[in-house]
Image 1 (cartoon, helix red, strand yellow):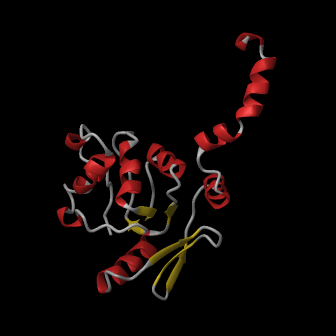
Image 2 (tube, helix red, strand yellow; image 1 turned 60 degrees about the vertical axis):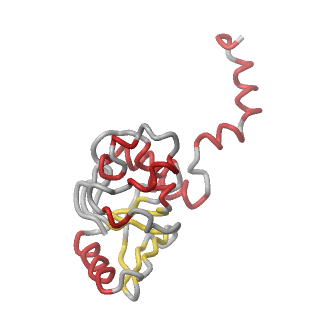
Length: 174
């Protein structure tokens, strides 16, 4: 559970970007804000935050780091636009919920830190224990995540023959 304006320098501080791999960076994620998180994140965890999550610089290290840390979803009041796009392109659902609903989820997490938080992209709900609320995200991102077509590079690779055929028809590729 995090607050408002969690920027990319909190997600992965700039001084650790020179490390060779994202795996090397794992231990430093969120270190300015929550040093106790280091090494405690498990695959499948979901971040619950306030407004403007992912603000700051638009570096792709931040969502890539989140994926490698093990996060598989983010619930916030709002997201920085570039961060949202970089995250959903990696397959990380970023959904918005109201301040009141996020506060309720926060209360449930405070009372039981092991309480699972689930994002249902079919029903567009977030649930924690017996509480459930509506969430939103742009339909094109939701549809891509649900259908498994969120990765544009995979789409290009899968369409290699069609791309080559189109390139053959274009005079400037000959």
